[in-house]
Length: 307
Image (cartoon, rainbow, N blue to C red; front, side, top):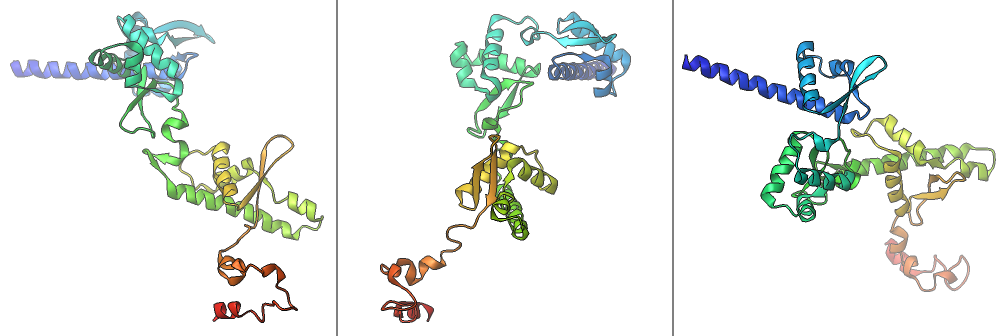
């Protein structure tokens, strides 16, 4: 009997934990949809949850004050209430912590700064943060600026690129090879565009104009290649194109509509070979010509360099 009672108690605890997990999932879904969520939405998002159990959980959340019930398009929908009311028996300290994190926006805030602004003891603050995190009101995000520090923000916010590093970081590591590949492919696209215009017969000005491409054109080319596992934006492409401009491989101009246009150019020095020749450092190279006292044929420095 004792073993049977123990088994029933464990099963009851497991079921309770499962229900609490489903409650948190429903709350998270409602947070992602501020305008409200319907029974149809819940059925799609939680297909394995029986109808009677879903109704039981929703009724419980309504009684606890998590949702506002209203009619939308002839069907019932549920809108999440003020997040500060999601914690049962929320006191002033919890509301203060929530407001501090809310004000930080999608850049987040460190534990030390929360403690400084709230004047709470470390143990008390830790307990409050854990409670808000369990209820999926807030979340912890890793920052590329300080990997050992916890950054808190509201659960439904997308972290700012200054926190995650954007497309150029994965697991807080800078993707050097990925950036190099994008750099090469962007330049290749612009170079191919320049090569195609060599057959243009409408004059040099028209040929030059056709060598330019917008950052959106480059973004579409990179997207079609499918070389990126992450979703890149036009802004990401402009960052790569700017590195090519700094390297002297690409020219950037401003279009009439305010957008940036780019085209591949020949670098001022294609290789350091010219600088390594005697001509590169010769003080009288401007006087050198085919006929005269200083000529390439008579220059013994070039002869020695060629030998």
